Length: 232
Image 1 (cartoon, rainbow, N blue to C red):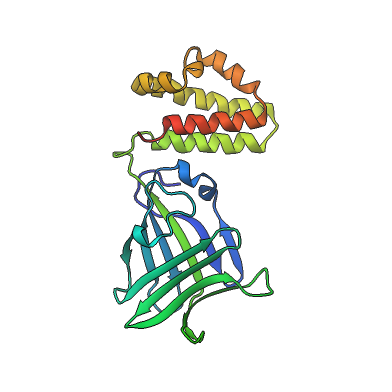
Image 2 (image 1 turned 90 degrees about the vertical axis):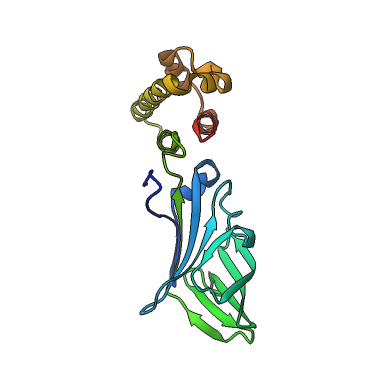
C-alpha cells in the first residue's frame, strides 16, 4: 500500500475470465480515500477512464454521477450509473453525440467464469469491447491527513489477528500496536483519551486486557481504534 497519496492502489479487477478484489474493499469506508479511478483497457488503444471523488464514500457510494471529477472522453456524457457489488455488475448509460450507449461489465449469462466488458448501442450491438476493468483508489496525502499511516497499520493488525489463533503472532502484532498508541499519545493525547479512555491508562495492562477479548470483541476494538485514529 502506498500511504503518501502518490500512486493508485488496485481494488477491483475484472477481465474476460476473472474478477478479483483487494482487502482495501473490505475497509473502504474506514480508509482516507481521496479519489477513485474507473478504468477500462483495450489492446492497441488508450485506456478510457472516469475519476470519482472518493472522500467520505463506502465501497459502492462512490459510483455516482454527482461524484464524477473527470472523464477521459469529453464527448461522452454519463446519464445513469449502476453498481451491484454482489454479482458484480457495473453499468453506465451514456449519451454520445445525441446517441444512447451503455457500458456493461458483468458475468456472462449462464457462466460463472466469463465476463462481458463492453459498450453497446441502443440495438444491443457491440460498439466497443474491453479486455479489463480496473478500479483503483488514491489516498489523501500524509500532509493533509497525518494519521493515515497509523490507521492503515491498525487495519493490518486487525486483519492478521482475526485470521490466526496463534497467541504468539497475536502478541507480536498487539505489541506493535501498543507502540503506535504510545507515540500517538504524545501528539493526540486529548483526542484519544476522550474517545477511548479505557485503553490509554496503562499500555501494558491494556495489552493483557485486549488479549483476553474474544475474536468478535477484538474486531470491534480494532474498528473503534481505527475510527479514533483516523482523520479528524
